[in-house]
Length: 333
Ligand code: SAH
Image (tube, rainbow, N blue to C red):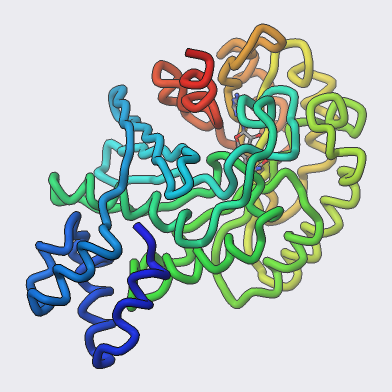
């Protein structure tokens, strides 16, 4: 689906066509122009010929988690995940880049290297794909998390354009408070997002209680020290008054000891800081997941120190729903 091309085709059309098209694509979630009954037949045919809106994708389902690999115009593929909540609330996890340059040691995307940035419309298309899919059950996308492949703040311009498009009442109309972005800690991005007049949620992948562990897991940590990240976070909180979630993935014998928990508690005991413990999704032989009991003990230490902490329920391991895994599996074949 090429939204730029669609806009070109209707450039000469009366202005209200633009609204009709927005409604058809982002409210009714049509899958072919034929369904756009508000448009004259000649225009429908022209659009069908010049900019078809089919989204080419391979989908996999495991319980409440579904994953799709969408093929883009240049033949590259991008992953996106749908998590269907028990309460009928649906969360979509989108990718912001094809591959990732951050090279995190535990991450399947990081291991595959960087290919290219996604355009804002390629990000939006992932959400449209799931909206069309959910339409069959008369459901819709409620939440969006930028936690797929890539580092959103390394593709800031397209990332923020996509957020504004998703949020726009004329298009997808998804509330900013229902959109979350996760960053490895790109300081410039944290600063920029603090200045946006948007109430989206910020999450930071900390994954370590000190710089030496972080450096071993995240090569870019050399550039982004924990103290610098926390300073930028405090600045963000001062400017926005919004809470910040710190993601902490627990890897056996790497970052899950009592000492690590105590060290983390010192950093995290601040108003508007929240810690989200994430069970590690094994992607290779290098690291192992911490046991459930260890995660609970780790959580307890944080709670005793009055840190706001939750554990993320991990779903979708069976369909390789951790970042970059589906694409990795497919390439290996
Ligand atoms: N570049 C962004 C988004 C990455 S994916 C960031 O770093 O935050 C979103 C989250 O999934 C990040 O916290 C990332 O560290 C985490 N993640 C990556 N691989 C994982 C794995 N195998 N198991 C659990 N979490 C993983």
